[in-house]
Length: 240
Ligand code: CA
Image 1 (cartoon, rainbow, N blue to C red):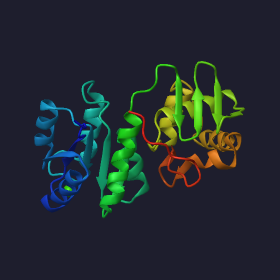
Image 2: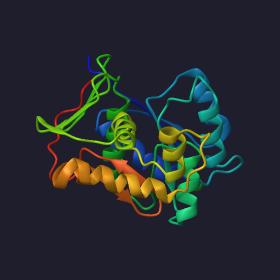
Image 3: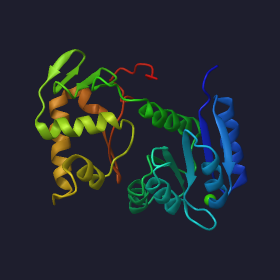
Image 4: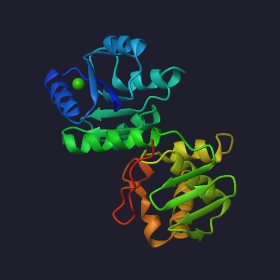
């Protein structure tokens, strides 16, 4: 039997929760609904979902606080979180991502877009291969031999660009803020300005070339992400 991914919807507006749940069910997901933070916590204690859709504005504890708490807890830290937010403000988006959300989607959203985001976070959760080879579309990186290729063509990358690409590919489809990238790629012991990230992303795109370079997207006001869904890169079916 096909695994039906479980989705925990944390949303106090029942009309919205209902709409999401119906659409998820039609698309082969197993939604559960929690209308407040206490119920959500009980649901999580009982069973871990594959994805959490977390509303920002909740009665009692906010979605932002919940995301922080779940990220800090070893049991729940790896469950992908997509924040649902009515806020379009840049600082709020960054706050959501810094709190550990994997992605966010602004209300009102199309259910088609929501499903695409859910599938994307599930795809990047697929277990990384033991060989150290990560492939996204036609782009392939071998961490053990330090090789990167696109469409079988070898590419030449500097050491920082290689580390950056490795991180992007291991966390594809997820939006990373500049400060997150500094922490993860440069390490948090070094003080570097955030625009250093921009410089290396630019170099990385150049090294990847015209087509593969487009897989590194600038997400305005939030940061960067590597996506298999860029117009020109080929998209294979997800590895599971
Ligand atoms: Ca709400």
